[in-house]
Length: 467
Image (cartoon, rainbow, N blue to C red; front, side):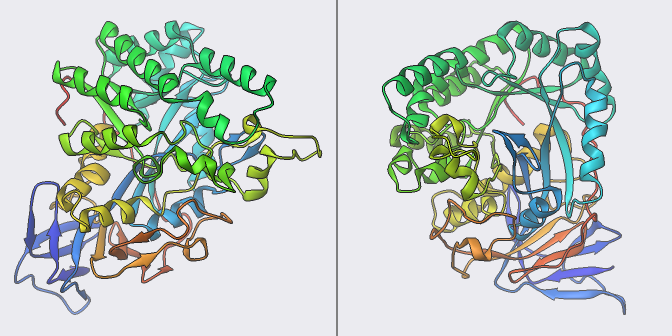
């Protein structure tokens, strides 16, 4: 064996137990006691520590053009940051161009990612154009290439209308694919923006108000109804509101394969952040909502109606966030000119594990949300998401007694601020292994640029809400 991690407490989504883990040729080859090392075996003592599967961040936007700029983390700095937070696989988004075949979009993006990624990765495709049959049919080519999940936007200029959304849902049922959705009512959002700006309401609070609970909730309900009509499964990304949470719970209780993701920023912050001095740093879409919605999300986690935690990691510099006040050309900005997005890829696992450490959820639930369920949902559970013989040796050693106050200076991404500044977490990852290779230890990144690889996803056929 190449590596044995001894004396740790193994945590899976279903159980917690003392055992050693043996690794050889990037895979977990043994779990138990009395594992026999060779002369070349590295021995790591994890006494007093938890041993967890590496997290899977199912929602990132690396090197993404948006709002007149490009998100500040590229595929290296973003995956470096992921590794240092215990995340060993990321799902990034390929945004299809107008008239572009899905397969061409994947290849275009892989050219950027492959030389840079420090941990393993895969893709979802953001669908922008299915106006021609060949474009819609190219979804099947993507599935054949190992990308079996797609995302439609109900908002933004590049978003799709309900008819196109319905077509994508129909197609997904025939090719073994999962459709995700960014659900916000574009038309109402646009009306509110126009009204607020006409009234001189320009600061970040009005970003929240123009994308309020009702704007998101109506779209969540509509998206679920479209999925029911098409007989398709649906994955609602970055769910942030009570109305949407209630709709997900009802649909799942009725037996429909509806799945929801939420993000740490919605679990920790509320819309009150849009009253802060640097409220613009918190501008993301959907925005953080009120306390009632936050409580509903935590209830959804406890009930199992929230299936995954992800980040929607899409950071921009403070200078770019300042475009909400003054644009690059010196002209006045407003809440619509602030690039939407926040950093979180390094904070997700530490935050959720901290909440487990505090007793809010179990460590098993944290692993389920951040590793096991994403692997099952996106078709990579044959490789990732658990500590099991035969799977990739994506392993995190976690010290429940190492308390950390988050500072941007200690983060490993390409950002000059973090919305998590000053947040205290109880317990912290102290080592991360990606396919058996040590990529992070005690605050230091030890991985290599380009060491990650593209992970092909299996076709996805979710027929019930149970994963």
